[in-house]
Length: 91
Image (tube, rainbow, N blue to C red):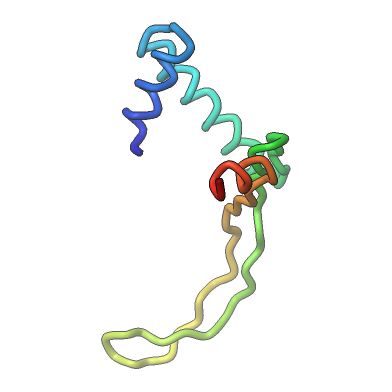
């Protein structure tokens, strides 16, 4: 499923235009992104939780040359599925 499929499904199920569905999806994703940038968690009960995890700096290897490199510390987005979502997928 791609973004266009989600917009089409939102439009038909909610009885709204595709433009309104696209705008709603953009507002949702922008809101989640802004919250994660601030370091907050976004929890949708029954669906799951979006959060940010910190990765420490580490050593790695350049696959082309084999030379050792340092990989900088970073923050990565994370998603943990809620119980209702897990149950729905496993039915």
